[in-house]
Image (cartoon, rainbow, N blue to C red; front, side, top):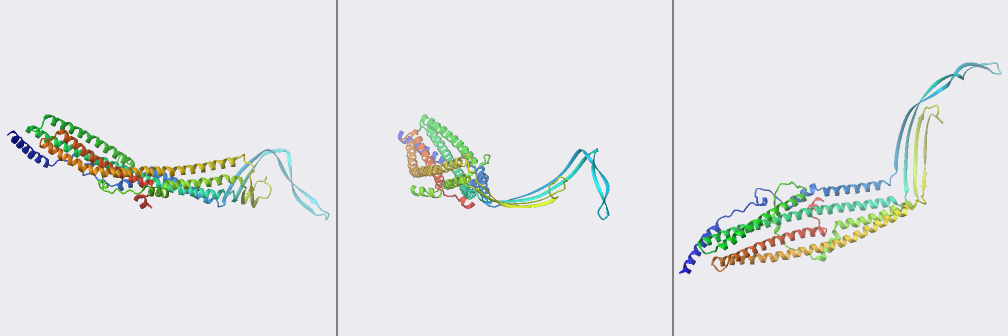
Length: 481
């Protein structure tokens, strides 16, 4: 009789719980990511904002501009130098206590008894006075000089500048790819935290439903007080998980806003469709070959090596003689009474000049040694960069493969844990199980779902970093070209 009564009580409780479970449960608005009124910014939107305002990219642009100006300077070193000059000078000279000259008339008689009148001038030492002389001087001039040989330094400077320019261009593109990667990783991390928050909220709401069921069973006499207390503790723990997940969302949003150069950006939602992807990973050997062939920072390092070798030739140029051609023109006017020569004159000169510094106190030798050492350092850095790239590609490849396998296992674990939860709930409903069984099964489902989210986002992050590591240009860079 007691069994029949107990069965009726359980049947009534099941009917009540069915109605409760069918009632709509509002999703809590812990995070702005759940606010449907907020706009959705796609990954492309965030990347474009970051590229448009990145100080790092602007610095790379300026360095590229400097390298371009160095090429222009090295090219025009082959042209002659021209200069023009103009001088105008007015002066006033005062001489003190100058003996004044007296003017007088006198006549001369020649052999034919002809007379001629003359005007004479003589100084009178007793008649002293100050004398002022005003003069003007004007000069025009032009000069041209052409260096026809300086130890091949001009050619090496031009080659070094061009290699440095190409290196700066490669560095700029690679810097752009690094900015893209930073935004992509921050976006995926925000997506990860938003998905984990949703899992936490759903788990909390389901635990709240289970608590309501347990309280109903307790009122009907088919559940113990300890079962209710356990469910309440479980609900408080799930609420704490929601708070932590919500804080993580806010921190990841701050990271993304910083990557976008918008630390005070208004909140927005992310595109969750990115989690629908395949898990294709290419063989690691093919990735190694692609990285060594296409990696732009490696290309920049190689060009830097070329530039440093050109600098060795430049440093050796002082050991050779220098040959210059020159031409000068000048014209001047001078009305000073103290001038030498005519009042107005001009001059033209031309020629060549050879200069060979046979001993410069070992300046050329030491400069050449430093240039060679710089070239060797550039080579060593290039070799080290290749080793670092291989290690980086290997690590990212392993992370991608691990995330892929973890996602596959997590998908199967979710199915299994959900079935175990259903069985645990059924056993508890008929009195064959405990509340602890339901709590453990519920935790397993939550952990499996969170693990799947983590694995998917880990794979997305690893794939984005791997694309950058092997030198693949992103869509935003290809479109900009």
